Image (tube, rainbow, N blue to C red; front, side, top):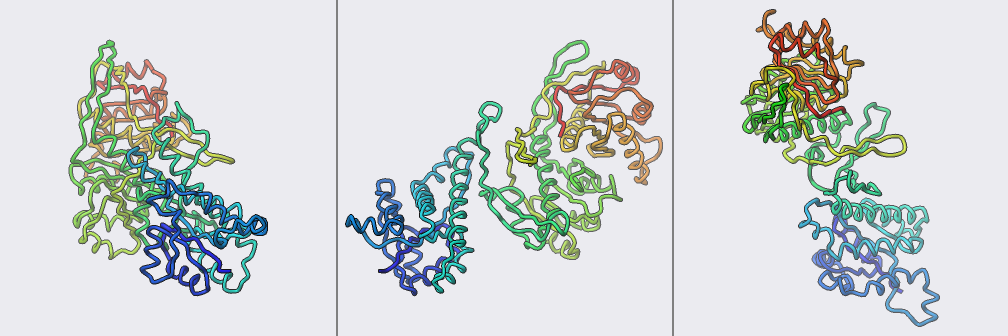
Length: 536
């Protein structure tokens, strides 16, 4: 009796060699559609399996094929009832690509009848895995050929393959389910089960430390930073490199997206007068930032890439070594000449010109990641002990402003407030940032207390001022102070404000301090309270 093998694959890797092996060893190959065409073009004998033809699969009798898959299990029983309809199928080689689409119009690409037909075949093959060899991953073809050739197919191997088949089916179902539910707000329609079809891209050389193991998984769509990292040599993909590149690109993308088309802010003066603050759209500008261990070491917006790089790097030239640099603009030759001397370990940008790549080739320690594609997820997910925490993305910078002083912010100050607040959204609680001429000139992150936040940001700004040889002691230290926690009048705050800070914006959690309001009014300093908090 000739054994039959059913083959239908979207991932065609190594399928020709495997099918040829089966045919040479006396197996009859059943197939249809593109897989059948591929095998016939390779001159491999194929029998058309009409129940799987895509043009008629929606009316095909699925039970006929399923019974042949189960026949090996109930062969003696079926023979006694004279229900033999062809030989038994002893091998199923099938795979499909799990995918996701948030666009309803593209959902039809996922829900083609043939995809569900194949997932049904795999699921039913699992129920008879002790008799059916189920191959859903090309990586298993080699071992399968060895065990078939030696006529020693182990129970452990069958069990392992069955688990992988269900893993593929669950990923396919998760992709369809997630695509349907992607646009639902979790606050209104919380998902009963969190299913994400994440695909293993590669095993990393090590984890954060050399003794740890690590793997890189990706969404089944060619998007986001992982799509760009896939073009690099696997040996270059250290855990830290992936983590830092992802953080930097997410900040560059989200900051630039948030500030490129500014939305109006409903504003209320201390006299309860209502008006609208319209921020300046940043279209045509360049945003860049430096980060290390997911801490921001510099950031700026400028009208050209050279100035943006210079202001970002000059903020902290000591600690910026081996940091990650992210930029919203294409890195050209002039930018590369500036960056190659900055000792960055990773540079993330939309792309790099050929001239820039040639310059960077002189320093093998710099990794270039071109990431023009942005994966904008609607959720933040954290792994905790025994589960996951999921929340909607914090994408709204401001909704309302409450201006507590007689003076209102100028257009420049308002725009710098927006920049500082958006940068600070990437930091942990009890953080503060100083902005001058649309660049970070002082930042402190994750302090133990709000009081320490002001002390540390003042110290950081003074150190930055001393590093800048073009500055002098009487120069204004900053334009804007942004803080995400309650601050009160203190010697540190008075010293900071005496250094030229002309505007303060505090988050919605801040307690209103009347003494601070009076001090700001007396010294012509603008004080604004936002209605939103951004604790991360």
